[in-house]
Length: 432
Image 1 (cartoon, rainbow, N blue to C red):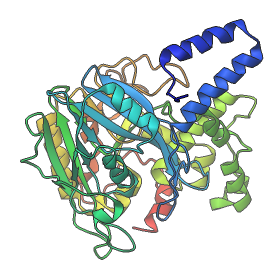
Image 2: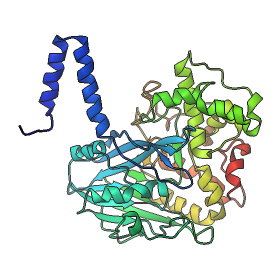
Image 3: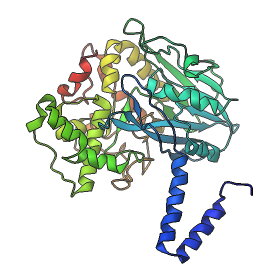
Image 4: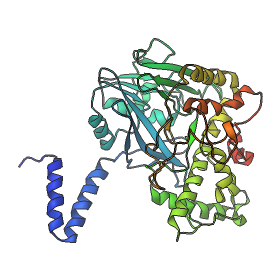
């Protein structure tokens, strides 16, 4: 007999027969389907410096159609190892061009599930675009591009590796060319703006990121320059991880107290217990967001995250690690890039970053968010929560809110106003 992949009609028949049989049969069928799904999520990765990137063996892909027939996002979970709660979503954005071909921004792990999603979108992959020099995005560019050998591969200039400087080809990336401000093969449909900063650490680190504007969908795409922090976690983050991180007896909080991290052994914690899993998940998301941005925030804000989290929530935030290590030293260059985005792309309907939510002008539900704590049914860009006018959580177009996150760049020494407790920066300043 010749084996073949099950058709959707086969699955329907199986489900129909299962209804008429025992509950044991239902369990078997469900487990079989789950097993098939899990096999499509397998992706082995144990690399990363100085911390390995997780998940190590399996990556779930969540797909959202952001603009009907034009723009899709594919998201996976990504964090650093050791199960410390430093995790968030990493996003690949796919644009369908006017001729039906696909333009792929910041590719993610090419699991079977991810590739099936791209096939369902339809169209040949024409361009694979690595818009940054940062490792957590670069790691997938080579494996992804190999799945689409006819696609052109374009990478941000200034690629580096540490501790040894190695060419992109060493990592399986064979670029067609490097991204520039103009004369790109997609320029009739997608504008490009490049932020390339001088090298740091004796030439061993270069920050470069390209911003893009897709004209037909009125969408701005960025990678790491700033993220929009939402009250609700990304759909791709496992609820069990959030509950454990929020619980007083979870691994991370137990370890913090055992090591007396910054005097945290005797500090008060959040007022939740495992008997309230929803409450634990909400606290867990606040802690996870702080960990993702500050890496090692102050102990008092890990244990009781409300104050630090509220400084970030509902706003675009420049990643603290990017600010401390890079941006604060090149304020003029960063401000010039941001101002050009605001001037030329200010009418955009959304800003799509590589992490945290997609920020829509008029969306009643942000794709990929809100499901765990209930659907987000209000528009964060048309309201002000908690008072405070233009500079608070609401108000302004997505691009205006994005550029507002860089107000500090117009000053000589100010830090981002969203960092409400400077103690959260202490660990990052050790490497600055």
